[in-house]
Length: 140
Image (cartoon, one colour):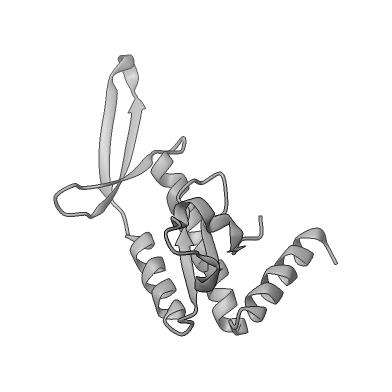
């Protein structure tokens, strides 16, 4: 078994221990990958970045490049809201597990999705400070 296969098996095992079935676990891994890529694009890549219109909340892919003669071009293209769809699917899965809570971590340098037991969050604690106590739902 390769190292990556071992990591995948570990995540499935841990999700199963928390009460998720195989289909839910597979969907959680897919949701994490979608959110992770979304966060990368929000930060920006060589191709451009995702921005939300402040008035409409619709996402756009913004591309800037230097053309002939040093002239800069700036274009915005409509972009599908993959984050909204992923979060909607996540909410549907989490509704079946009332003792658990999910946390979306927006830094693309790490895992985008964590699952925690509600009982592990003490009263007054901010989940932003303790989310890493939970299971990181990522393989890479």
